Structure formats: structure tokens, C-alpha cells
Image (cartoon, rainbow, N blue to C red; front, side, top):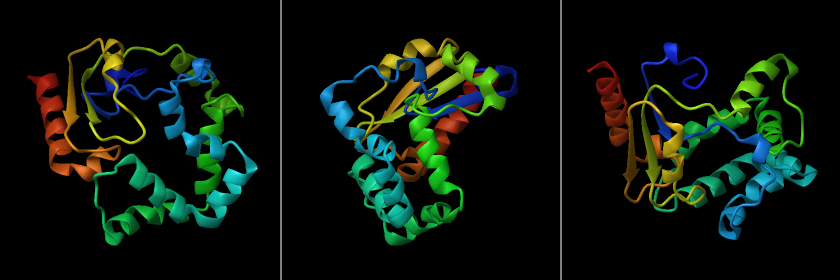
Length: 187
């Protein structure tokens, strides 16, 4: 919404910075270590991955949480609160389609073609924004290079010892970022 309809947004707080998929360049290889951290994406490209997600989505999700946020010692109750979303009857199909679409392996929804075309242009974020990375993110090794995509007032923060699930790992710091972004935008 912030990229295409900035008039609808007061400010943006974004974990892992610029999150608009660059499908046009998705088939360009990343450094080997980065590719290795994306194993689950490639797994979901296959029927084996789809079957694995159908059969044991909770174990896959828990494995990803542990890999993405290696310093976060979440308990079963914390995982279970989020894991209830895995029981949605559309969960598997949405996940599989998302990971296949972002690599151009399946078409998008034709009703959204205009929006997809506009997003493919990688539009800048013009609204006030605070972007946040965790310095212990097991899947995304840092996004400082995304700064050029934020052309409005922008601040980048790094949460020490945090991984990929920033709002759950550091809820007070995340909430403060939301309050700070609003204050930056409204004076």
C-alpha cells in the first residue's frame, strides 16, 4: 500500500526493509550462502515440498522459526498461538503459490495484473519509514542496501540478537518503532 497508494499511509515500519518481490530478477543467483538459507523456497517449488507441507506443516514452520531466529527461545505456547494459522484450509495452497510465483514459476492472478505490473517496476517508498533488521537473522543477512528504495524520511534500525520474526522477538522495540514512525510523519 505504501508503494502504490502513499496517500493511504501515515508511516511504514518494515521488517527486513523493502519487501516488494522483484520477480523480474528472481532467477538471478544470489551468493551461495544466501541461496542455502532459501532451501525451503526451492523445496516448495516441488511436489515433494507441497506434500511435505501438507503432511507436517507444523514441523516445517517450527524448523523455519528456529533457523530464521536462532537466538529466540520461544516456548510451545508462543509457537502454538501462531501455528493455529497453519490450520487454515487454504494455507498450503497460498504458501506454495506464493513461493512459486515469486520465482516466476506460476502466473499471478490475472485480476491483479495491473497491480503486479506496477509493483514489478520496484516503486520507491515515499512515505515516512522505519526499516528494521535483526543482526541474527538466519534468512536475511541485512538490508542496508535497500535504503535507496526509501525516498521519504527514513530511518534504519538493527535489533541486536534478533532474528527474522522481529515483532514477536522484540515486541516493545517494534511498538516503539511504530510510535516513532508516526511521530516522524506527523511532527
